[in-house]
Image (cartoon, rainbow, N blue to C red; front, top):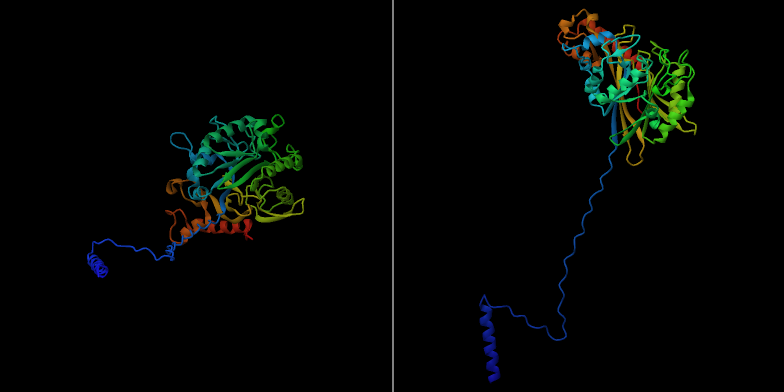
Length: 424
């Protein structure tokens, strides 16, 4: 009876505790022989890997421009009230094509003599201010090898290179010392946006000024430069092109002073020499000297190993600045090349190419005074000027019907001579 009563009391106590919300929970031991079930572990989430970003191609934009032939009226145009010279306004209509490039180059024909006695043809002695104006406009590299590089003899080359250095401009084709010429065979190498480019520069002659005492001072590619300028010094060119290949840059660019003056068609001599440069590893060959536009093309050659190579060639870009009056000497262009390097293969190609036709204007030729126009000489983008006039903007009365007709003819001539390029 006591056992039954005790069980009843226990049951009553348990019911009473269960009714109380603050009562502790009682865990009864599992019956003997039964194992307590283990808790099921939560699954560990697998981290999502970050996608590997696709490598982006390296892209370089080059602007190629022609020859600076600094006749005296250009100095008159640039003269400032304080006696200094500012040439940048002459470029104001086209400067953005230089500024937007990653690297821009042109050719300077003459010397910075610093003596205040500025001369034009036949010896171009030019104010130092031109160098600083070119830097302001946005140029980066000055090709020095031309038939006027020795216009102030080797002393003039030394001073000219000093001025270019002070202005922050790279230069190639002329040298102060043998050591300077020997360093990378006088080649300028630039790494631009991950693309490496080797720049070389040569001239056919010196207008009869000897370089015998300082043969290192100027890259003259003919052995008979004092007479006919027809015998190519392949020993020198072979050595320089081999040095360029040894640098293992992505692109080799050769600027060369060659050809016949005032001839708008390329000669066989130019074609043969261009083919030589391409077969030796050049990717770009940019010509100057004839003072007029000459054609451009994508040219394919077979190198000595039997491999086909295709490069960009312009036989002559024409005068960038000058005051010449013969037909076509006022016409030029700037070439915009885009180079793209494939990150997967390491190969670099010319991915786009276009040129901007330009004209060197003398406002007096159109019966307009300098006072009316506010300037005397300017380098204009022909297409932009035509578009302005056709949209009703005559640029303050400067573009007359006669000038408009001149611009139309100039555009036709540029497109006829330079031609059209279709990229592969």
